[in-house]
Image (cartoon, rainbow, N blue to C red; front, side, top):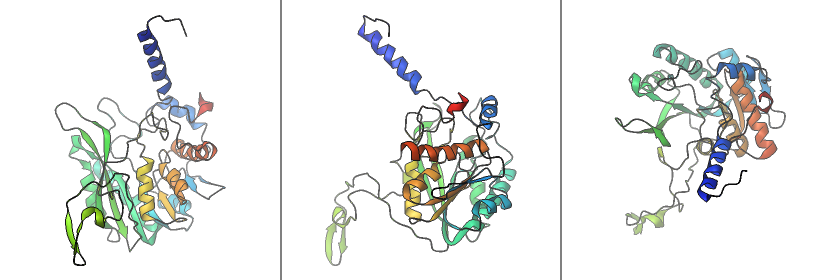
Length: 335
């Protein structure tokens, strides 16, 4: 470091150095074709192939979720009790940017694809099971595809709608001429009579003065509590949106979901040893959450690069105990 007399300059020097260190080492993997070509040679799976974890028998495929034969290859006759899917939202990503892999198609075409992978999910599920689907609503295109997807789900009589949840994104997006967009939609359906375990947040319960008569005795709200913290409702305010400075961050995977959100779903809707599926693995969050909670996970992604990223994230977690790469490179051999 050069000799700097002014302490303010010293602070600026280190601030600039930290900023450069914290910058993500990968551009968006759905976006940069030159980068994708470079990473393709790093992938151990080719389209249609499935990797089986030698330790705990998780499975990761480079497969199309809308293809029934491909999904059957992933499942290998096994049935899951819980599905957590995070499909592309049919958005053009950004106003000035165009994503070649996560761009928008006609809504009817998108919904037909959804119809296919929902049917494949149904075929892969146990008699008593739960389905969660992350989705979005494009304000610039009539809020599609959320309402169309919800209407399409009515075709599947086996899936009973249970809740429409909202995860609050702390950062948010928007302009000075509209309300800040901070919500992430999550749809919850069940089939049969699956288990549901009440999970509590870490938010202290502070409401007092709400009284109710229980067994002839007037009791205050906190007296009746089963926990000192509150239960999550269908609006989740306590979960941090993933960004580049968090340990669980996976560089290049822009649509990553928080581990704590997926763990909450898994703990509430499955038991230790159960099978969880995710047909859109992306950054591998469902696989890592399953590994941490003692579940088995079968997951896939149509893009071999994201399938490879999912496998590497599991291996990285087992080797280091870290849930992501933060600001390091998941493909060091690619430079």
